[in-house]
Image (cartoon, rainbow, N blue to C red; front, side, top):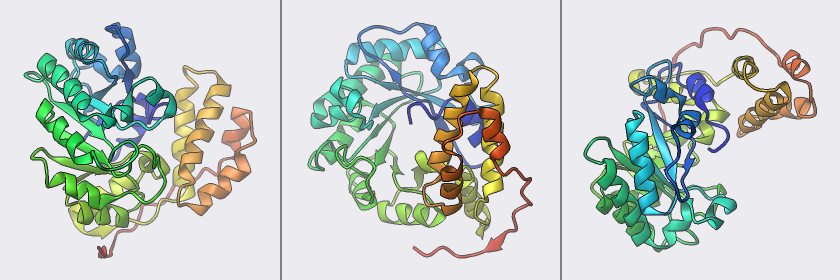
Length: 323
């Protein structure tokens, strides 16, 4: 989620009940302990303890790297700045990141996953939780369980599993049943991730993986009301209506309003269209609007062209989910 889940986006996505916690974009660790300003850039929520969005949802800090000692030093730095948790990224499939020995590249050798987790745990594990995210392997799934067990043995207290290998990227489907195989082989909580775009996907992911919890990534951007919809169903058994285009347009407009306080308008224009492109997933109206707006280069024109309306209060309806 590099480049799309900044503090403002976390704020906008967590204003309604739905998320239990959020994770920052990864802080890239190479060969040195980073200065505080880097951590504050990625996680400005650290400046107020405890680190949380304005609505009170905890924000966990994510590190990406491969050198155990450097990861440990930066985890300790983050701890000194007030980090609530350290999450290690072994799931990023980006070619540039993998070429530089980060993200999913470590999944080719479970012992390297263990070494990274253990070093961070030894540095901060007696004070704050250490967690991790993996995929089902790099090129295939042969080492998926071994990598998960390495995470657990290293001292992590929770594991998020994206249900695809690195080489599978984001091509559907996500193999939720494989997440279930991992869950049966470790004792720490496992969180299912990947291809959870709808309420039905949420239920199927839970059913096939056996996981109690799921993590939303791109789908939270595609539908900012997905997490609240899931939470509402959990609490009431009621199914909220689908997210309308005016609801999406309003969140994009507010996003632009706050981003333009600190960024040039051309950059804000690009960011708004980037989020709108995410909203196209599974939504024909958002795709139609994207095709209409994608060539606009002026921010004021773009915002004026959004169909902005105040959505009516959603009507609750009882609709059972089918597994």
